Image (cartoon, rainbow, N blue to C red; front, side, top):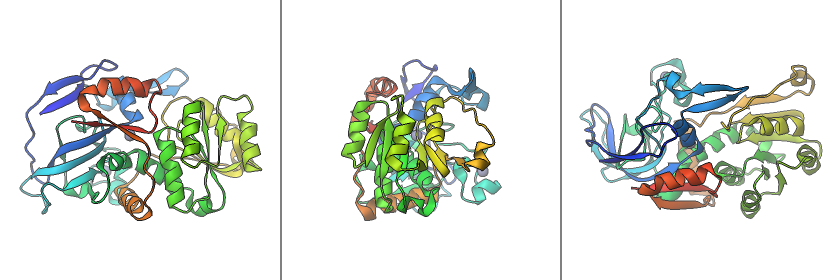
Length: 350
Ligand SMILES: [Zn+2]
Ligand SMILES: [Zn+2]
């Protein structure tokens, strides 16, 4: 089978022909139909996360070394199962939950496999979707997408469940005030749709790119703000009255976290799920005095992914713009994403 692999960090992916794997135990082998390209793939491709202050989190230190097969947003159809797998429907198209944990620790038993410290996510620690076939350890990670367009469904496994899980952390608050969303890329547009589907009262989007602000307005944002404007924090306060109560930082850079802190109202809740990198100097008295809640959110659980797929079906949520490209163009697709030339999401088709 053909795979497109990181053989060396920050170098173009290489087309490699490998033996098609045979599923063992409870494993399922699926033929990839579409595989999404996400910003996390860029970090994995580069081999590190920027921790700010000149520090890096190297993936090699976590045992993640080339060759790597990226892509964790996969829709695929079942072609074979191991001898111990429960019954499956061959040929059925499924969205794969890629955030796979060890299955045994207390975190996994709570249903939070996505944050298992021994997690082996698909397209990260296990081979992902930039290949003709993908192996999944158990059919329970497959989510039925009957009735949905597969190119639209694929990004739900990461862009979708990441925004859904983050927005759920605001609880009922979304019905009472708009969410300030920083970053109008694929996740930002998805967040606008999730908010609508959950009955939220809307979103104000921040982005430095005028084309992305335009896309956010077209998707129904209440207002947009240029994150590079010198008075961006004042504009946030102007647009929200007393400052934003609910802030979703989908970028996660020093500049965006600073804007979130400056633009938050007293009692504000900031959820960070972007991984752009940087750091934040925090005056500790501001936590109790203002009083602020700063929370991190990392992808989502299998339950949340199932809830999201149901929500997409029942609400008829407008899909985010998706561009389809043949998988052999993966290196151009990475280049386009790296240089900010992608509106919405790119999915690759083997
Ligand atoms: Zn675990
Ligand atoms: Zn992702």
